[in-house]
Image 1 (cartoon, rainbow over the protein chains, first blue to last red):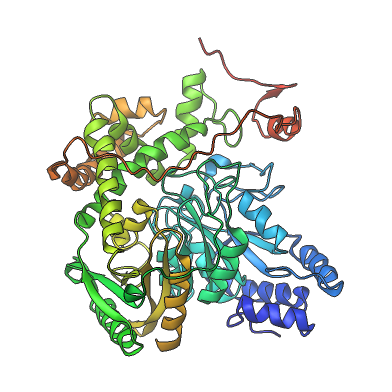
Image 2: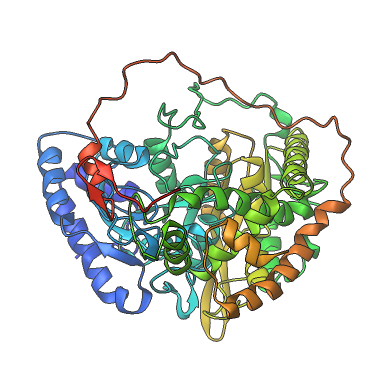
Length: 476
Length: 89
């Protein structure tokens, strides 16, 4: 039996092309892992009944000599990404019964590359959360410690990739929802440049923030998925991926300069294990010839505040479509107003309703300018400040999260949960790319909990993330 | 923050217990996001303009009826080619 717990997409491809394994073998192995792990981990909402059929089709193509970047590779998709003919609920009761009438562009692109889809994964409801505890159904636990969260909101995709239920996954990142669960589960999570992957067919949470992100065991695996997924899409007017030739660094002198943000290590709630691991990686990077330079990014300390104004505002607009009329759950009342109130009151979980109310408030008459208007101005300035920092360095490095995975139920207060996103939120605001790479472990209560390090780079410079990420994989 | 009023605007039914617990939580959350008030921004700071023009001419890209049945079949209350709702006015 193939060990899908350690098999990368890159290696699987090689074995498939050589004829040493078949796609059916891969899916069989993944389903075996799912059987072993799902009782405890619960990463999947549904494992597709036709996964084996898809694998058999892929094997026919491979035998006929066809090659595709992901041909025959089983991928898990987050439940907010549409696959035609498959259920999709955003892990919400309000989308009970909904079957996707079309493929999201990202799925269509991955299908073109030959990928097969093994199942849809659990998430925080409509991507609102940092642990999957807000799922309308159940919590996904961390494969490294079942008493701890897998992270969120893409916890299911991260956990499934980590234990081998799939060879890779798709998540979505709005405030850190690909990178943080990847870090907690010990896998790689890429948040690409906003717009580089189409949002058509991704259930919208924060339209100016959302971006689909690949999750994989290795940096190279996320690169493979990203390359298959990316591209300008006419179905998404916010999508744009510039066609470029081979990347060349314009300025050689800042090539190997990595920035550390001034004041970063004074972040409240930063765990000692995270700080020690960060310092260790920094010194190892220096030994590899990287120069570490302090950079100042004024206003970065306001990132979370800005995010928790802009995101709920956009959430309140995007969730208006869930009204019991066009699809999903309907809890009827005596009139149309009651239909809405009942359906949305009962179909949405507490965190979703919390954010809708907050968003309604910051957009309401009299408060709109002071909150949403001002937050967007600060967002703009923050972007400029990041761009200024990238004039001096080619990448910026931070821990991905202030702590390793926390216990299920530990962060019962919403604000304390929000603070977990402190390192990931800034690049959702600036729209620039960031990657989380496993960087070590923290020993907590006798268990080894994964730690992750985050690298950010200028817009459309995912190549820098892949390069430095691969170095970190070598030296960690 | 008038939670009752906002809930009506957002078409959300909240239980009295939720109204109470939300009120407490919002106090803390608003206190946190209120930090942006202390930032002094001159009014001529323009919003980030890395926008690309993606406008296109009208074309016949949508095939009439291609998605009709698929979409209507998802509706909780349907009548032929119509989605049924309760009286609006």
